[in-house]
Image (cartoon, rainbow over all chains, first blue to last red; front, top):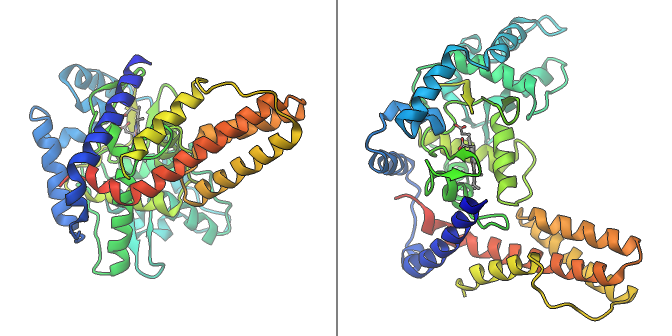
Length: 287
Length: 105
């Protein structure tokens, strides 16, 4: 509680200072340059945490110090996400009523492809996340979609992430003005303050990673999606990317958007793109 | 102009902390006026995709108090909801440009 109000006050004064100091820069024309953004984003974290190996950023709060890293290694010996992984593998292999299966909806039968999601679909003109693609696959085959925030979706994405473990995040932005616009919209969403606490995603995951908020240690924004979905003791279960976004929004006292809203799809695109090159580590486990 | 945002936030915070001055006894008509002003502001905030959870709770509290005939409390909660909704609108408006100040470059 104390930590939280300190963070809040800090963020309010940071906002004041930011307004005072940076207004002129805001006026300057901005060109969208995702490659330059990703470089700056990664450098920021590499410089802020020089002791953290680059590939370790993908382990969320566990990347923040040696002690946490040891806890993570111990956890990985009897991973609490194992049941979800097994369930996901079985679900993935079980045919739909029409005889087709998930493998028919994805390149390479869905194996080892998680690092390419989300992608920009030039036909639809929008970002498609893995969770969305899974539900579209179900619906195209006459099955009801799963809830975006519950176990089935987390099990499926856990299995798909597992088949991609160690593969570098590989998000493409095609040469299409709509793709750039989606990327830029995701970036704006990431840095926009919201909720009564006046926090952006960056307030917590860029300005304060490694710090405690209530009982939790904040994960760094760099590679923050590479470990998804995650098992959390607090949830006593698995959580999807959708579930995490909704929870993070609520923490700032902002009313969350509906799962897979355009803003969430776009922010996932942005956060994944700037993590290009860092390995997939999902599914993850958290305290 | 931009400096007004954190101020608005602080005011909204103070209001929620219950530090706002107590109003004199209110009647049903006053409540209705306060409530519809709050509802309009909260709809505007939602339209900007920037509703705050505390606005929704204050509106619900206002409605509940009014249903129980406590128009004092209902009017106060409506005014609180309106202030919160307005602060969220100021926030969303200001952030249209201000987010860039946070960007890692």
